[in-house]
Image (cartoon, rainbow, N blue to C red; front, side):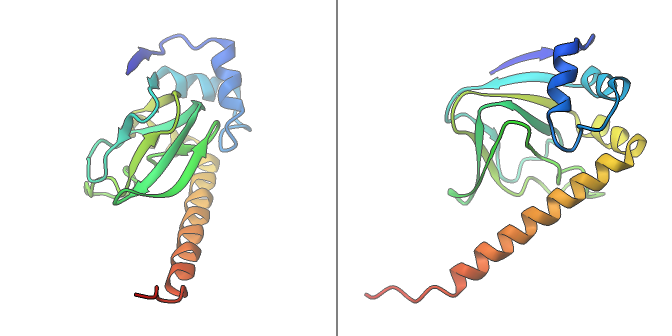
Length: 158
């Protein structure tokens, strides 16, 4: 895993963030402020990024590659460029631990934003917070549908 701090964001990095749906409407200053707190990380294929139950509250934005979200070893979602994960960890007022494993499917580059910096950013940019909430609601709805479908499956013959 490779880490590089972003202190002086360049135009290319700002444009990259503009491609992230929840950040696309922000101006250069706002995106630069977010990049100032972020680190770029690269994960090899099959490398764990987050472990279920861990307490690190960072947000990850996928720059390139894909990740798989797994619960108890079973895949429940795949995320790619421009999507994010880790957003639930900082929403609770008490540490609860991560809710799933996140594993790189192939080589994956992310922007890693510390939880406190992300929280402060959302307080300054409530429109982004609303988009995060919409994404969470959509993910919850998809998980609920998937679980409903599993419950309606006929029992396997023995």
